[in-house]
Image: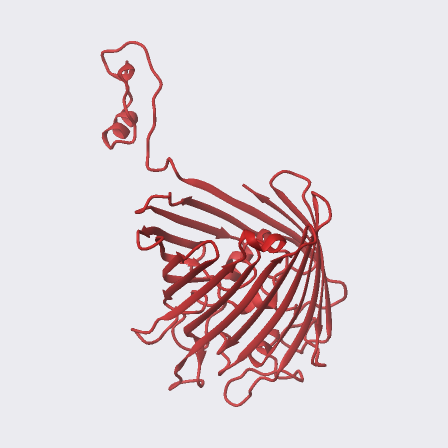
Length: 413
């Protein structure tokens, strides 16, 4: 039997085993078992699309929650995500990896500096106590009720809480499960901001700390209700904190010093005695937010209600309130509007306040497909217009309210 050079090459490095039927002195072919290091690798991902309509004229200042800019009154390919991973097994010295790539407008909004890499880390386990799991490389942010992956969230549009949070870090993360109730995560990262920032900072190093030895600390404590809680079992409480170098400076221009950013988070998911009814809550607080503002601060609080109407139809509602001086910079850095102005060189931003209601109906008709219809209302709670206008550079926002009607279709594989 003749064996081609490609097969011989694979056999030489151990990727293909040559059975007796493939040796030169055998006549009949036989099955060829292929054993490689990829045997435990999984491939998954999704394609996320949407159609958005904002009634009324003027979209120069859309509501400033994550991934909203540029989608008004049109069809959108939001994100394409591809994840290749080898999960760790149950052994004491398990190892694995994750490589997650993202493409599209939403991917650029997450982090333009590292795109298309969203996550890339090595997983290791050390047999200390119940076992410590390590992630070394770039990994998703710990804090927050909502995810970068829209299908994991109750609603398609993101909350203002998610908007304030970083999306990923580069560093080392340790996860330890004390028991079925308590688990903890602690990590050391280059910074507590999104890698590269959601836009270039006004001054300093976009990767984080301008001080060589300075790093950030990220953490999350998770408490899960055990089976003894009856109908409440599986409910979870999360408490987390990030502290370390961000992108804000204590003053503009030469001589400005990078200040530490503090992010506090408390969230909960509550299973109720009412069948198919789930409640949620989230609180985010940020000081020295990454907007270029001097010592800017922001706070958001949100409540969630999810009810499974039928096996295929689910209703998800969210109410949220956001306010803060740093939050004002997200709305519009326009000194002509009543609450405008960037917080640098004495033009300190004022207290901006926004209230938002979102209702989402999810209908699971096709296998592996998530289809949703959503209506969202964002409203100024401080009396100043925050939305609208036809030109983003020649005038401030003109509307106190913004309505968004969106359809979302996502395929998971």
